[in-house]
Length: 340
Image 1 (spheres, rainbow, N blue to C red):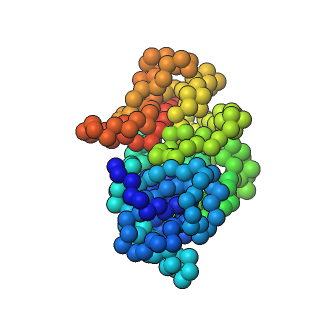
Image 2 (cartoon, rainbow, N blue to C red):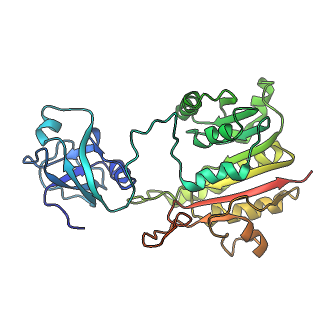
Image 3 (cartoon, rainbow, N blue to C red):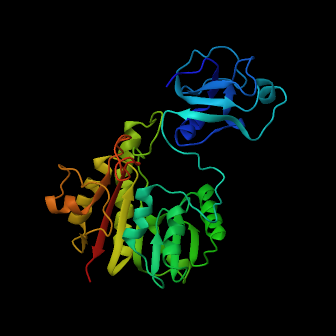
């Protein structure tokens, strides 16, 4: 791809959004040359250091990454003098990553999710009339999917401990006219206190989805990951606490799906191996849909167990047909059943 001479600089998060198919919207533009006018072809760079000041005109010397070319729909004067505050500033015509623009879709008709995320609901397979727990539910994509699969019949309890994220679950359920969902701000690792204060919450559930907090190292495309070793090591203990709570909250004969959006063995296969050893009343079962690969070796799972879990390695395979099972985000899914 040839790089256009006129350069525009955008926020790092906006750069990643462009890689995922977005155009460049006005609030994300940091700098542009004084000569830039509507209709110019512009090379878009993301500010990796997050040190560029708004309205920058000179050549930026900090670390930046080229993410594609586009057509300016507004001039520099429009952006930083007239200060138009909304709309598309640059319509992307060439991207480094081949994702189509999907903005403007009606969110009460279509809910965008990655393929592995969609699989979680189908593998859990909730039925109308059942009780289902979504332990870490925000922003609510999987919650709405579960309730939809249940035809809005039964009960879905959606939990998240972040107050600032819980509203999105309620909004999404309202947009989809889903009345079977109860939303609560609560730590799923300690559900007893909530059960004691709300008699409508079951003591145990038919189905449980634990889409666990994780390092998110499978999310792609990304410009880079900013995470410390200490933070990486903090996730497995959280995942173990949540999984222990999930096993206790699951009815005998019930189904539990554990998933993450990371490629870390320590958060995936090693957690499953720990759970199988710690809780002899659960076992892995074959997943209804298996589009990904098998689990990694060396984390304590037998060959049979490795073939029962599902891993997406986040490979980029643009020249391979039907690459939906590989060219996706990094993800992991394990499905357990509790002995009757």
